[in-house]
Image 1 (cartoon, one colour):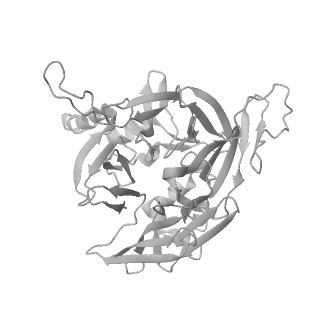
Image 2 (cartoon, one colour; image 1 turned 180 degrees about the vertical axis):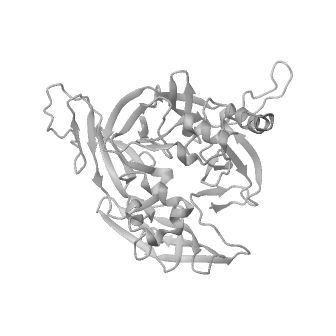
Image 3 (cartoon, helix red, strand yellow; image 1 turned 90 degrees about the vertical axis):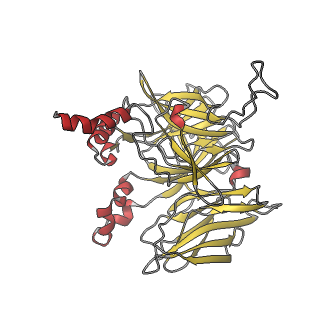
Length: 447
């Protein structure tokens, strides 16, 4: 290697030993609150605090400097008491581990000046962060790619799909400045693992199996009558990732299989939590939850295979629920955008009633809505008593148009909208967050 190439590679080699600094920190995936502060997320551990009113970037935080992770999901869970949980990947001497990180609400370390005369200081949620528990990846140096994770009253739910990231290849692509896509490997002949980690002690409780599927988003998960229910937007494989390359997008009309590659559906897995007797016949359905159509069977090696039920025969993505009240609890409704690119109108907003197995749709020609965010009424009487907010963009020559749509969450009818014309084309947004702006004593939506 010449001196010139060595000098060029040196910063990249150095960055490999600083998690977060070796990956993009373009935090354009999601928005989440830590206490009274809002942060923009990506899957690298670098997040950005921004001003709610001006959207100016205020602070850059590398979470890996506080806890031993090299990445994290773009979808942490925010609890009612302000605690935030996320899942990240830790690298240990025995290989990669999936770690649950807890960010407790900040508090004052002392109510008065300390003995040495220095005033008390409020610790940030990042300084208080700790790893609650870790479980090893099934393949050494090839952890699964995970965009979200689940949480219930007693468990963290880790869905280890057979889409892996090769750590050696990822390091190589970083050094050579090649696309990271080469690091992904899909194991079609391997099953998906659903791991339950106990919240009380961070220990692995049980591992369930499911036929191979690819997913990005978990809708919700909860416990009921000795079962754990988890609803996931599933695809039969990871081919849909190939659809997102520029070349694939430019040749959509020439690829007859393009729509099929995007064919995902919301599925419900019902996991029996009770221990299975050794004399249980293999044909016995272990799911005894009343009304459940999903099944689970014990295999010859003692492992339990979960087979899901279909929640809705529409492609649903970026699902949202009445999060503040029904996260980790039995729920009835979720809201999503269509992922069926060959639908008559692919820009469709969807409401699914799980109890009655019905769905409602809203669409408008040439309009492409974003993730629907549910906002409850001040004193909601029902789970869907409120409105749904969605950002709108237009196509076919109207790329500088942008708007926000307000739907009645109960009737799924449009209540209002606001539209704007911008000086440049507007990209379609991904995930947003609805929050209260205490300084203005009004509520604000951040997209």
